[in-house]
Each structure stands twice: as C-alpha cells, then as structure tokens.
Image (cartoon, rainbow, N blue to C red; front, top):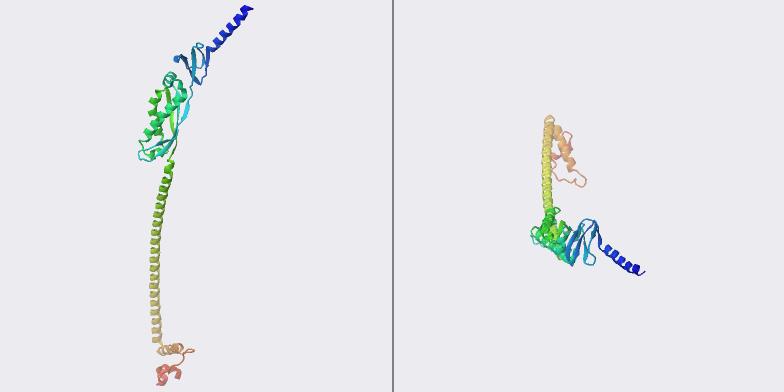
Length: 293
C-alpha cells in the first residue's frame, strides 16, 4: 500500500511532464521553442513538437496572410493640393526567427504598429512625388506598386513579407471641401455665363439675319409688284391706245362717262363750270362734240 501510494504521484508527475513536453502546431501557424527567452527550435511544419517542460516554452505566430488597415493619412502631392488617403496592406510572417528577434515579446501587434510606420512613411514619399490628378485617377496601380516595393526592404528586417498595398479612398481634407466646392461652383457659374453670352450672341446674329431676310423679301416683293404694276399699266395704256385708235369717238365717250361717274357722287355733286364747257358735251347730246358742230 505504501509503495502504491508513492508510485501514483510519481506516475502522475511523469504523465503531466510527458504531456507538457508535447505541443501541436496547427497548419495555420508557426511556432518557436524558447529557452530562457532564446530561440532553440523553429517548428514551421504542422504536427507534433517536443520541448523540455518548465524550462522551455512555445510561442505561436499566425502563418496566414494578414491584413492591416492604416489610419487616414494626409499627404501633400507635388501640386500642393492636400489629400486624405486611406490604405491597407496585406502581409505575412515570412521569417519567424527574424520576426522574434525584431519585435521580441511584443508579437504580432508590435510588428503591425512598426509596419504601419513604414507604410505611412513610404506612402507620403511616393504620393508626394506625383500630382493629385495621378493619385485621383483610376489608373493608380503603379503608385501602389511603388509603395509596396519601397516598403519591402524595411519589412524584411522585421521578418515580414509585404504582399500588397492598396489605396482604398482618396478625399480632400474636411477644411478644404467648402473652398473646393466654392471654386467648382465659381467655375460652373463662369461656364454658364460664357454659354449664355454665346447664346445671346448667336440669337442676335439670327435676329439680324432674319431682319435682313425680311427686308430683302419685302424689297424684292415691292420691286416685283412695281414691275408687275408697271407692266399692267403699260398693257392697259396699250389697250386704251389700241381702242382709241380703233374708235376715237367711243373712247372719248367712255372717258366722259368715267369722269361723270367719278364727279357726280352722292353728297359731292356740286360743280361750278362754264355752260359751254366741253365737260358737258355728252350731257347735251349723245353725239358729244360732233353734235355741237
């Protein structure tokens, strides 16, 4: 009984020690075995690993691709038009030993903060060398590639591999929005005034052209009417002349009747003439001047 009572604690200690000396590495992570803070073993492959209980410890790091969003960053492009840029990076822990030596016990969060500083500095440098139009254009992949390539060397010193850097959003600073809006409004007002002035000018040209066309049409119509009237008068006179030549007495009778018709009208029939006036020849006789002879 005493022997079994002694063996049970020993067995329990052995079992606990055996279990604590075994650790499992997941396929999504890498592990370091540390002894008094120094790296004694690297376990990158998934599976079982062993360590000395109580003396050695296991530190695990994520082996997947990680994402890091940068805080909004204000940059000043080459044309001095300030912009606020949102960016994010995708990276992974490539060299776990270098990573541990670089960040120590701070781990992944400390590395992420240091990577933030690297990316912010490179973003300012790259975007500060180009114009705001280049940054705001849809084709800015070359700028993102330059930021990534510039950050690779410094990230490697941390044991990190920068896979990609992307600009999510690029805006004007809040204090510049109103000024930019007013400038855009002024530009649109100026364009509207220019368009209105051009429209007025075109309208004046059209009205002037229409007035000239009216004058030309009226003048041409009057000229044509005068020509027609002149031709009609000439024809009438020719007819009168022909009629007069054919029968002078009848023509004289017709002219006298027309004169009587125009002179003797209601309300206007008072005439003061000499009794022997030729005007009354056909009133005295149907033979006219021939009868008086």
